[in-house]
Length: 575
Image (cartoon, rainbow, N blue to C red; front, side, top):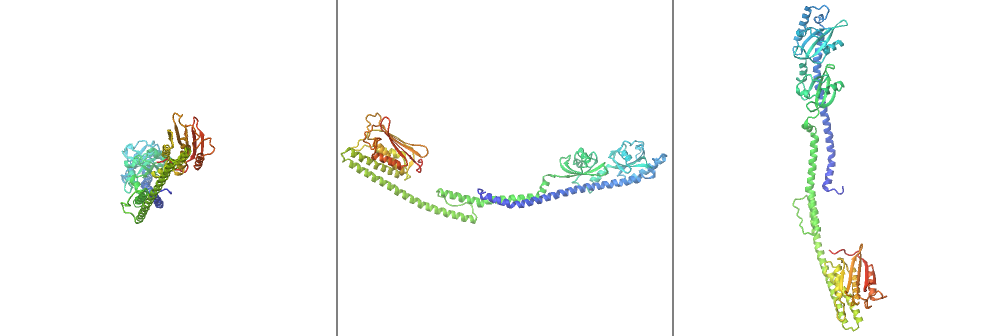
């Protein structure tokens, strides 16, 4: 979290603060949804119970009607063994008078004998027909009370009815059946009539799951008949499934008349996106408010914190790079950040002022150092000129050679100081250029001191070195080249002096100075000499560099000087 930005940390803190509120909103919304669904489930139960109560009232009234009507003497007489035509007419008249009181509720009343042959009926066409194959007849034979059968279509009447019947017995002997047909249309109207909930379809079905009535829309809300039949057979009174219209419902099943008629109510579990939005309304509003708060904090932090701080950081970076920039934010800031910005501006002005003073001081120091190097170079050149004038009065070649060696050493220091004041960095010199200039000055002929004509082969890395390395290396090169110029090159076809400085592994440098002339024992260094000023000087300078010097004869003639030393702590390649 230490690497997170201020805006990110602020967003995390606000999110953590909003978590309890969002959690409480989710909890409250969940409770509301559960309560709403429980209310809908209660509404479904109430609707199906209301429908069931109406149907039960109709069934119970029909049961009492059948029990009373079928117990009359006019009905029992026709199933006796001594029935007459007058008895049958009396029975038909009685049954017709009973049905006349309920013209919309019931269709026909019929009395059969023990064999199921209709002997008395309000529908004359049914007299003589056999009802023994009807379900209701079989139920009546097996029970003693009033029974209700599955709905059926009358063979003579156009209307579909639900048969209700009771047995006619004499003593313990079954003598026949007395039945009445309840209008199925009446059953259906009780499900969809006044007082029914239009949002909760209630449909009557039989034990096979087939609908017994109701409008098409309600019927399509039911699942397929096989699913209803399976639920009835398994005693499943509540289950969730898809209706034939493709919607998802919770179904409630209540038996109305034993195992013959059932009322089914359907409660929609999903009512589309609008209902879902209503259920999640409170939580959605709180969530939307939380999102708006986060967005406001995000953009507010960007406007009043991130942008000002970014501008301050960019301004400070450009000031650190030395750019001349004016502190001028485009938009107004908060008072706190304005104070911070003003402090940064004043600090930048103070830094700029100090940098100007330091730059002026450095320029003055550099000028003084260059002037010092220049004057030292001039003084050394004057000393070299004095030595050169003095050497002109010396008659001894040996002493004149000694004066020439001293003059070369002074000239080496003069060239070094010239390189120091000519470079932009007064403390470093170009190694390759320094050696090249040094060799060129040493090889210049002087009066009374002849120099052989040789070719110089110089190869040195382009690098910047300080005086601590340049002075010893320059003196070593001066001493070795001066000694090589005293050799005899007359018998050599191509006189040559090679100076090679190569970087080895790490910071190691190997300096090799060799020639192909014949040693005349007049040089300042010789492999055979036990001790000489030149040998002592080269070895001492090599030790000063932290390395060592090896002097040997070269195959084919000449002297080879090898000095190995470390460049650790010096400047890298010159840019």
